[in-house]
Amino acid sequence: MKSLKNLNFEKIRNVGVRVDFNVPIDKNFRITDKTRLDRSKETIDFIKSKQCNIFLISHFGRPKENFDDKYSFSKLIEQFEDILEINLNFISYDSFLNSGLNEIDVDKPTISLLENIRFFEGEIKNDLNFSKSITDKLDLYVNEAFSASHRFHSSVNQMAKNILSAPGFNFEREILAIDNIKKSPKKKLAIIGGSKVSTKIKTLLSLTSSCSDIFIGGAMANNFFKYNSINVSNSLIEEGTESMIEMIYNSAKSENCKIHLPSDVILDSNENKLIDELPTSYDFKILDISVSSHAVLKKLIGNSDIVLWNGPMGMIEDNKFSKGSVNLAHLLAKSQADVVIGGGDTILAINMAEEKFENFYFVSTAGGAFLEALENKDLPGILALMAD
Image (cartoon, rainbow, N blue to C red; front, side, top):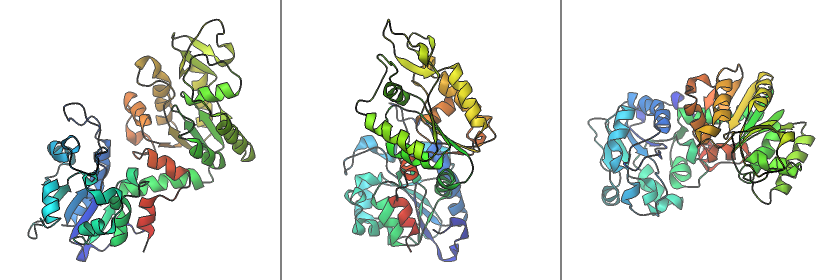
């Protein structure tokens, strides 16, 4: 895989950059989290400094391979320009269908944004001809959208194989962070939350072979409690997970990895209960971890060199039950370990705790792609960049 910084730009004039501008918005089309935009800025600015024409390519939402105003970038252009501190030339859906990327200003380098790439039929089909309609106009293709690298889409896979290509700076950091978790000989801890075992079973199985300890929190822990014959009453569980949990315990045992569960929890009544003192005379829901569990986490983190955190420890969308996740964010921010934040709602916890990303070794914005990479899967976006 080539490095962007080591490329000779002498003969590179037109550069396509696959970014992730799939930003969350409110009902007024105002961007509510600019993290993914911020992460692309370093790569864009670097290529801009080389006096190149830049063509930004991204998806937004899940339109059905045709123009849909609800998913158009046209309403977001001004916000993109403000956040990235650049001027953007917008290539509309109709303009691209009629002229492709022919709007190149040969006298003055420009930065253009193509309309939502998923409006075009060839994108999701990973179509060679569609990909070449873009890359035939380019000298270099850069993938700065690790979050989409698990998709066999044209802008993720085929375009990078057509011409000279390289990962963006944040893409490289995502790979390094994942390799650090999987391959480093240092002592590692994984803190895994969220609600479903089924969506993280492969990740958990992979982590048992690379981590010394795994702490399972959030609603996912309820399934492990139930497996261990602990009454969870009306707490959220996922039916049919017994065989998955057995696989995780068996793998952990064979790999000498210890599975840890919360020792105390917060109930929907706001009561703090130790696990072996959960009530039997009335119904309840487990909605967060509490003080004793926090102490367990503090000790585990203190004994680890590398820590991965993915998924909240409780029902984070309700402030009453976000303390476990917020306190964990504070604890990890102060840790001497290399802490990798695994994206998704974990970033929400970081923001709720008002902790800066700089306080952690790495904060991923990749979500599902990050987890799939941890599963030892060959991601289409990475494979394309490795092909010569």
